[in-house]
Length: 325
Image (cartoon, rainbow, N blue to C red; front, side, top):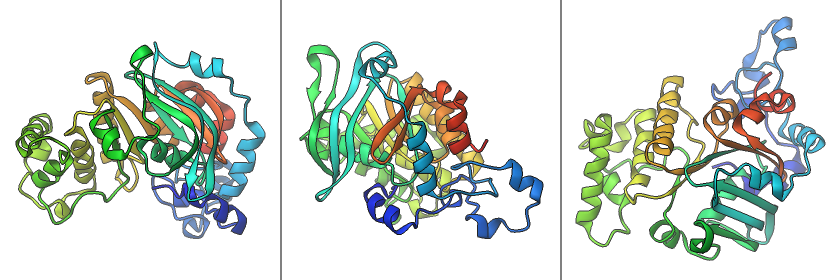
C-alpha cells in the first residue's frame, strides 16, 4: 500500500522518490532511462505515467499541487454526487499512532458511482481507504454508509463489522493472496465471516461461474498464477461476501498492460452491471480517471481538487503533474 503514513518522514528527509517509482511501466527513475535524446527530455514532463525521462520529486509535485489547490466547498462535493450520497466522510482527521495524516477530509460518493483518488506519494490516498475500513486511528469526524434515514455511522466499527454489516470490502494491493492455498481455498477464505462454511463454498461457485478463467485454475496453488490471475483472485475473494462498496488499492500495480485492461473491465462490470460503489486509489492516474465518475486530487492530507473524472483529465494542471503531458 502507499506509504501515506510515512509522509512526514519522507518529506523531511527529501527522499520523496521520482515518477519512476510509481509509474505503470516502472522506468525506475532518471538513472534507468539513460541515453534519451534531448528532444525526448524536452517533451516529457509529469508524474505517475512511468514513461517520462524528466522526473520531479514527490516533494516538488506536492508543492506544485498546493500552489494550484482549489477551495473545495461542500456545495461542490454535493454537486458531484449522482442522487443521494451513499458513502459520506465528514470532517475526517485520521492517521497512525498519534500522527495525523488526514486533515478535515470531506468526501461523498453516490450509490453505484466510482471515485478515483490520485496524488503524490504520501498525500493520504491509502489512508482514506484505511479510515473507511478501520485500519487506522480516527481522531475526529464521521463516516456513514447508506442513504437518508437509513444511513449508518460506521466510524467506530471494526473491519469485520464493516465487511459483514456495512457491506464494505477492501481489495488490498498486490500480493495479498494465500500462495500455499489453491484458488478455491482462497475464495473460501473470502467468506470467513459467513455463518456456515457451505455458504462460502456456494458463493465461490458463483464466482467460478462468472469467471471461467479462474474456474480453470480452481485446484492450482495461488502462487503459480500470473499477475493478472492473482489480481482477479483478489477481486473475486472480496466478492464472496457480496459487498456494496469496494475499496480498491492500486489495482494496476505490477501488471502488464493487457492485464491492466482486464482488471479495469472487471471493475467496470462490477459497477455498471452489479451496482457496486467503488472507491479507488490508482497510481496510473490516466487509467483511473478514465474509469471513474469522480476524481479527487490529494496533497498533504487534504483535498486539493475535486471534479468528475473527465474534468480532471481535461485540467491542464492535473495533466502536467499526473498525466505525463
